[in-house]
Image (cartoon, rainbow, N blue to C red):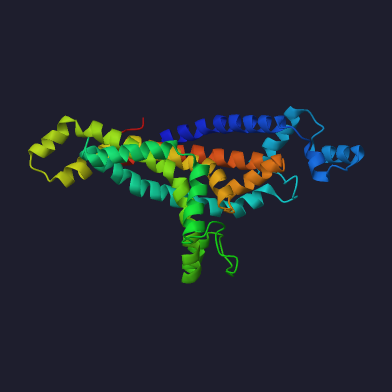
Length: 334
């Protein structure tokens, strides 16, 4: 197991190097001059040339990449071209908000998607199965930006039940310790702030969870249908075991591997989907930060955030791969 984990971890290295090359290359193909963006439209050519030299933009692109890669390995993702702030510091400051949103969304997707998939498989071709399949297909096909706007319009504007933006009300005074607002509020026993934060979290979490929920439900149903047709399931039923035990103890556990794979992929995709969700709901996380950076052509932020998201995506898939042995003891890593 340890040797397999080490080998898998080593395969991550060339993947991340390839991602860094692609991100670095694509960002430099975007129209616009970073030095001109920093100084403004009225900057003189001399000042633009001086800033380019300071940032190393006058060097060949391969030298720029090697310099950038060396900084990344030291944990330095560069400096924002527009704001002048270190990218790593801003990234760590905004990351808790994205984690809070993505964690809530994937928890909601698993908590609803797995039971819906199980029920749909057990009562195959029933009315409930048909409804769940139509709902899952609709959820996969629904654009997240449209869903977010509709949720904000209906529950926020028309019914006025839930807030439609930010993590807390503007009048709320609260100093988080770790920038995980809900966790910090609970630790500080500030239940009013915790409730306010949860109310602000509902709409963006539901919008972000819709597609993963539908995907998990469909995969759970397909995997459960395959397992329920196996001989050992019929043997367990013939022995007189309760249906609940057959479904949860024998069928579900053997159907978990494809579901775990989908969940691992969805966790990585949630970070990418959070760009749209955070923009719609003004959620101060990485997604909104990247969106603003793209608008201002701040390629240092886009590079740093893209590489950071790639690291998380690869890490989540590595952990998912290693968890297969926990879910199914028959799997051995040689």
